[in-house]
Length: 236
Length: 236
DNA sequence: CGATCTTTTGAAAGCTTTCAATCCAAGTGG
DNA sequence: CCACTTGGATTGAAAGCTTTCAAAAGATCG
Image 1 (cartoon, chains in turn yellow, green, brown, cyan):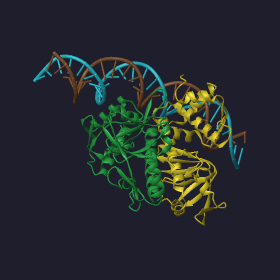
Image 2 (tube, each protein chain N blue to C red):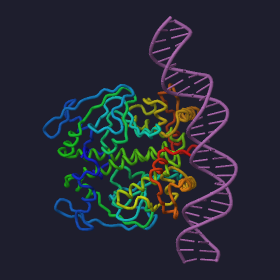
Image 3 (cartoon, rainbow over the protein chains, first blue to last red):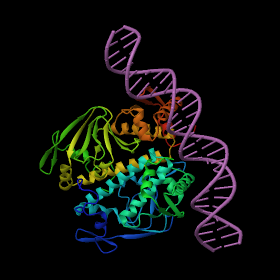
Image 4 (cartoon, chains in turn cyan, green, purple, brown):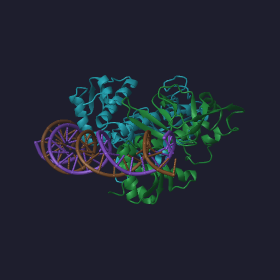
């Protein structure tokens, strides 16, 4: 699997395994395991730091964020999780991470025992998991570059670009970006304050790169220039 | 494996698999695969962004860094790799990442085909790999918190604390920290400039938390206060 | 339509960077 | 053995970008 790209077709994806039974079931070997679903209100926690891990979750609907806290309350959003994404596949992190829904959401709860059985009895499942973790690691490292070396405007542009590309992958219009998160959540993701995030949305709007029909809807007018802004090619 | 902690003993570690044969060999099933070694000069590249991936590497001696670049040359060091660490186990990242030795180093080169065979024929190998990636992901997310939400002094304190803890795990004196990297490399890791890194080493020294016998040797005088500094408990 | 929460905008403060100079350690050659 | 060179580290002062503090503008909901 190490030789295959994430989009390669000869290794099944996690989704294919998890959707191998009828809805609410996972086929493991020749038997089926029933999985439960959990409905989350907006801003409800799926788990908080320090809890023993009982399940791995798959987002079915809505968007969640994973975040870390400092003792004094400063917060860093580590990633946003969209439908299809797996939460908790990285078993190590449970001591320090929290998971919270941004909006009404629904997740499938997969008991750890089922994960273990999938790993040991479904050939290819652990490869699929390795692919998931590899991709997450690469994206997280990319975010390190944003947080460590980019200006506020570059961070915001990079953030929008990432959403646009996700849309593209999902076959959704890559120029109409719906933001399910507040400015505060974007700020905590980008290592900025609410005000700086807002100011830089405005800057991109004034520059004509984006439009802001509403605060949660971004219209990308010029994706090439947005890319320039994202890594500093366009100065101001 | 998802239920086991990284230190659990019922899942072999990657190292145990890779050292299963005589030196220079890896036992895969009932056969052996010969692995080569590569010696690196200080500041020699193991690979650069865009190269096709041919091997996974295991650090045997010395320290390397993985880094990413922006088009204008700004650099973000993503991680430092010490003996025992695996480089390239995350197959996705090879397009954007570079690996460079900080000092004279030696790595074992494991062909991707051997990795694939290990994954498919050695039960537990992919679990061990999942553990490695999980740990890396957790550490990288922790670094996100540093880069996004910590002040320069907190970043430097966190950095030193991390090295101290690594020493502890390795059974080395946790109060004598040898830094194999320059201030520039630390700066690129922490998202700061050389000068800011230097100033904050000095601040910690003046505060009595550390001593600096030389620029590459840190004496930790008070690890509890260093921890306070690391997450903002001690203001100044 | 008032109440509340989020977003936006403004001005001053603060922290890190930038620019510059000095210091220091190590290696070289006279 | 010591002056000289060189690259890294440290320190200083000014500039710059983001934050903080504050207020106004919008949006949502009963």
